[in-house]
Image: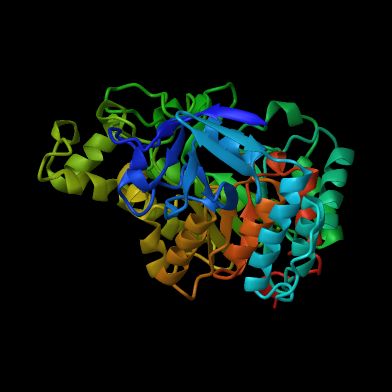
Length: 485
């Protein structure tokens, strides 16, 4: 038996549904609302008659004869590790007690089998008692496996030799992946020898990218080079911000380094010289390795967490804005009637670069990784990706919908896809958030109902169990990429 302290029916909290950082909250009918009102940053378990009946989303409807367990952060992890279908849960004052054992798992297997039957994955009478592993394997085996689909994964290289790269590529191929978004320019360095910027020091003396290209070609895995655009790194020797300090973006308070994003330095998107450099770097990449695609990331401004930490108020950016509008950006605040002009200026700088990439590389498959909450992406990051879709600048979109809340992931995938049905969406999933192999595969399946592929972030957090579950289920049959169909 496992026990955990809880907060019951919170009423005074700035957080959606009253669920705060690392809290485990219980919602009963006494909460006075039909559902919990929580957001996607957590997970919930539905308890009816003392038994877990459902889990994996947020803002669940509160049952008449039970309650909702809702966790964030540390509490979310505790719920994921200790509860499953059929778990017995009792609530006494400010504490819950949980029993999850072989007996409850047999009960839980019936609940999952019933859900599978409702989805027409198994016959309606499949309600036999099984272990958790048996019923999860039954579920995976019943999943459809598409013949045309994106099965992608992001990867930041950790391999230190050609042999290690070969092993990684073989692992991906055996797991059924067909697309590798390989990070080739990040932290202000390239992984390959470049004439324009420093190579990652750990790769001096050899060219990892040529090995990746050759090995992936052998196994039929397509590489789309993944490049950081306006994130310039951490200021280390030989990186882009070390070579060109005049390109560094500045916060409103005049500081360069971000507090919000782990000490990042950002390049100034308003500068033609910065955009020119990136275009030249991408041209070098295409000419040297003959890739047919380009995946843009950090195609945005640095995160804004407070007024004084907003980007970018470098002297050159402020002057360009003054020339365009006659206004001093440093005199504006969110309350100023001209503030929307500043936000539009930032959006325009990012969009201008996406347009340049489309023009410079008309035959390349051009894609971007973006933040799915559109209004937040526009206001906080200058990332108006809806406009990029409207203008047809992209060949596909990879929204980073990182959540354990499957309903939310599906909803946001649908939202992005509907903005332009002619530009496919391949949803970014988050195994790093504690999704079990079964839960990750199940989430990918639900998403596959509304879009034609997923990309997993990232290989370092995709465990062998995740790969095995995907291979047993959605990836059991080989799939070709949609643009080759």
